Structures are given as C-alpha cells and as structure tokens.
Length: 580
Ligand code: NOJ
Image 1 (cartoon, protein in one colour):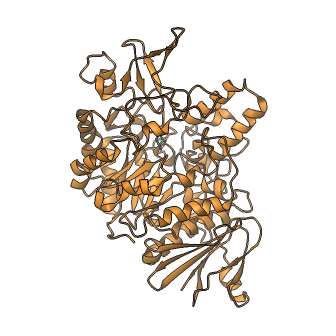
Image 2 (cartoon, helix red, strand yellow):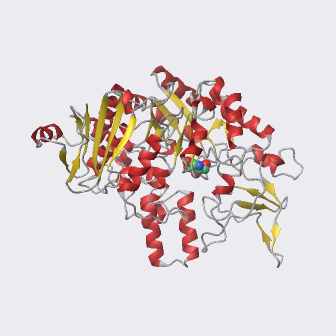
Image 3 (tube, helix red, strand yellow):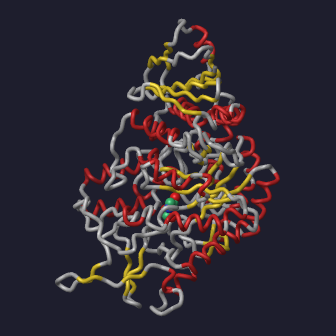
C-alpha cells in the first residue's frame, strides 16, 4: 500500500504528440495553438495532466527527441509564448502540464555539441562521449565497441576532423551527453529543467531515464545475433553504476524545489526489485516509471520488430506483476499500454476487425481504468484509433527506427521478397508510425486535422470517417463516451480503482482475464473476454457482487437474465465490472 497520496497519483494523464494532434495554421503539421484549441475537449474527457512530447527546437531527425535548444520551441509548432499560454490554459482549468525531458542526448546541432566536436581541446569536448578508434589486425579502423544503436547500425560515429568516435545510442544526429561530467549535469539542470519549471510546468516525462550512466570501460557486447556485427548492448548502458546517484542529485538540486512530478521511461528493467530502486517515495529519485514489459509483448529480444505471437497468460502475468510489485512498499506504478513508440492497443492486444474494434477498445478501456497507478492515455486511444492499414507501402512510413529496420533487413537478405513482406507485416503491428497518424477529429478532409491544401505531414488513416472525435462525442454508446464514463468511475472509486490491491484469478486461462481490486471491505471485479467468441467465466465468490458497468449496451439486461451462481457468458471482447 502506498504510504502517501501526492497530487499526481490519482491523476489521469493524456499524452499529446504535437506533430499529429491538431494543425491550427494550415501547414500540415500540428502545433501548440492547435493544442490550445482542444483544451476543453481534454477537460471534458476528465484529463488532469497533459504530457506533451518534445516541442523544443529540433532538426526533427527523431521527431523532436533530438533537441538543438532546450529553451526554444520548434518554430513550426509555435513560440515560447505559446507554451506560456498553454501552461496558463492548463492551470486555469485545474489541469497541469508536463514536458518531455530528453537529456540522455542532444541533437548534433545543439551548440554544446558543435563546440564539443570543434577540437579535441575544446572546453566542452568532455560534455559528450568521445573515444579513439580501434584497429583490426589488417589495419582497418573499428569503432570502440560493437554496440548496436536503437535505429540500426552501430552506436559510434567517426568524426574525420578530430579523428575520434562519439557515442550515440540512437541516431548519429543524437550524440549522448557525458553525465560523468558535473559541469554538463549542471548545464542540463539549468537549460532543460529550471528554464521550464520557472515558467510553471509541473514536471517531466523523462526520456531514457536509466541510460545516463554508462559502464565506462566500454567493452564489446556478447554476440547474440550473427546476422550483424553490431549487437544489443543494453547491459552496458542501462541502469549503469552511477544511475541512482545522478537521479538523487537531480531531485535534490532541481525537482524537489518545485514539487515537480516525474515519470521515467525505464526500458531493459524486468526485475521489480530494480524498478523499486527508482520509485520509492522516500528515496526521492522518480515519482514513477513506465516499465516496458507490456509494450514489449510480441517483440523479439535480439531484433525488436521481428514479431512473435503471444498468448493471453503472458499479458495477464505482466499486468499482475506491475500491479503487485509496489504492495507493502512506498513505490508507485503506472497504468499504460500506448504511447508514441507503440502500435495501437486495439490492434496489438485485441481485435481491430471492423466488427470487433469498438468492443475491443471499450474492453481495454475498462481494464486500464480499473488498474492501480497513475493512468496514461495516448491521444486517439480514447476514440479507439487503430494501426495503419495493412495495404500501406513503406513509402507511407516516416519513422527513423522503422526505416532503419527496413533498410537493414533489406541489406541483410538481399531484399528477399518473403522476408520483406514479413518486415512490412511486423511494422504494421509494432511500428512507431502506427501511433503517429494524425488525430481523427471529424469526417471532413484530412480528418479535420489540417486544412492544408497539400494535406498533413503524415497520411491520415483511411477509416477516419468511421473513427473520429465528432462522431463519438455525439454518441453515448461510443468508445469516447465509454472512456469518459470509466474515467469518472475511476475517480469516484479511487480507493479501489486507483489505490486498491490487485488480485488475479485463473492466470493460465487463455481466453479471459478476471481480476479484483480491493480496498478494505470494498471490492471491484473486472471480467474481460479477450477472444472473438463467447466465453464462460467464473466470477470470484464475493458476497453481494452487482454489475456496475458493461461494455455492451444491454449488459444490465443480460446480467438480470443470467442463471443464479457465479458463471457468466461474456460476448466477443466484452468486459464487465462488478462491485461489492
Ligand atoms: C524514447 C522516445 O520515446 C523515443 O520516441 C525516442 O526515439 C527515444 N527515446 C530517443 O530519445
């Protein structure tokens, strides 16, 4: 049980991806005034905190996760003044705003890196991670290690001018900052954090939060994927030796002075004991984290996008694990299953077939809204947006990671037709672009996202006339209306739904997911059907269980007609929530 209830624990957070949310000026790209125009929509849904993905000045090699100036806004998105207006617009509605804090790396266009690479004796040389080459026996120049970067290829880029390599865990345009250098850390705190905290932002989603401290003897990673020279190497840069020291310092010197909330992105950390080391309230590092198990379902360990089929017990075990790991501690957890780096949840965890997608979206909404932890909703999740159509060719994809995977697989297999068809299928399920399609506001041209004559920066989903906000706002039976009602219910019963103890039933069942949430004598039971057929479920034998919400409109009538006892039949992708 959590020992305290700071303001952010029972909040519902809504993530905005600025490029794809709403274009206000007809250039085909979303912007901050576009966000401002939708504030009442977000308030109406029941949102407490807005998290906006990077809107800082950036060459946009990685959609803004490559920042060239922390203290400026990417001009096509707006200005610092627009951000001040957004902070005010949130606060005047009783909402809060958190920004993305991307401080493992900067853009190679950041003034710090420009100085760092200008000469070996520049005072900022040591602000990034530079190493001399290695040489093979035949004299060929080799990078300092064989580490694989996230966007395919290696993590080292050679600089002809100074004849050394610099480290980049992501694109070569995203050099890693050297956190070993105290002066660099202080500059990061000032520029990326205090600048915005002083303007009133309420906290940060912290990018790659466990990657700042590297194992600094820079060894080769073991070979696990013989197709490539570069190998997965997270053990050398994730959860490194000084990680907790750095986070305590950041908290002590900056965050705690503003009562700022943080949610850290925590990949490569499956061990709950390690996660707890980041999120204990008393230790003052991070408020909470996004642990990656749920979004890694179906990903291959060596090659993320090589999709692997999975079964429901895997998902159930993961949900249970990250619900229960905080019990009896002062740690806190998050409930999320979508963000800008993932395929849409309806397509990944349920069914986006035309006859099942609405039921699927509501069933997943019920699950998410009943889970303990701070709840995160990604833009479009509230209307049940789905993955991009299977028919779209590679030219429609924009993401640097997807294109890197595509190119490296094409090169490794000599463009083998069958392999490349599988690659496209994998990207259609797992690719980051799935989440980045423009928000579907209405059924007018370009889904009402933009009125640009040239259309949006990224193609709008073909199904926008069916799946859009305007249509759903008017329909009490829509996915949007269901999310709104579930968020309200979550708030009314927060002791159980936000803070309650989690219990799972029949963890091995492959078709249905039944769990309970308990606070003192109060119980909620959630029964979910994860198949396209009718399924029988057994409700736990709690006295006085009564149906509170169903995802099917006639759930109350069906419940009344049910035979006495604990057995129920759930229809395809149906969810029911009972309370006692
Ligand atoms: C995680 C972000 O969510 C992702 O979009 C980005 O590419 C990497 N970190 C690098 O910043």
